[in-house]
Image 1: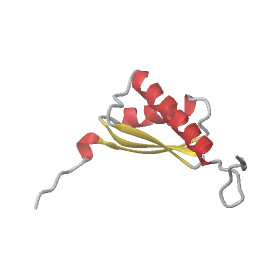
Image 2: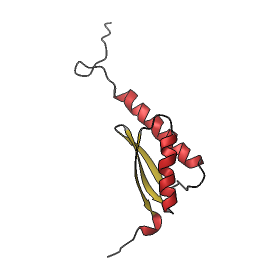
Image 3: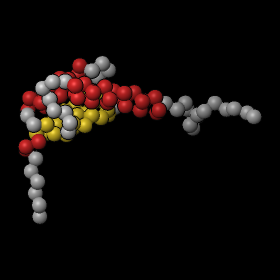
Image 4: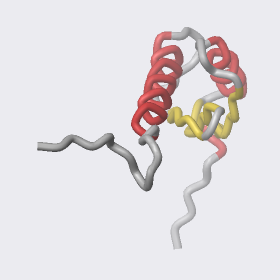
Length: 96
């Protein structure tokens, strides 16, 4: 039996390690938000895009929006935070 080095079009696969690092960072930020005081992060989603953390979802106050950014920045490995969190009470449901 002959074993060949695993490649994809002649290149070493790197995607799995990259996605594992993203997932680890996303979990670390989500956990930090979950245990931090001063914020209800139950409706906040954390994703890693390129080299930044993106926060999205809804919270109850402007202070919670700002606190989410501060908390995310304290996590080791986070360099940039993009906060797309909205106020829950500012969302309007329109039915036609």
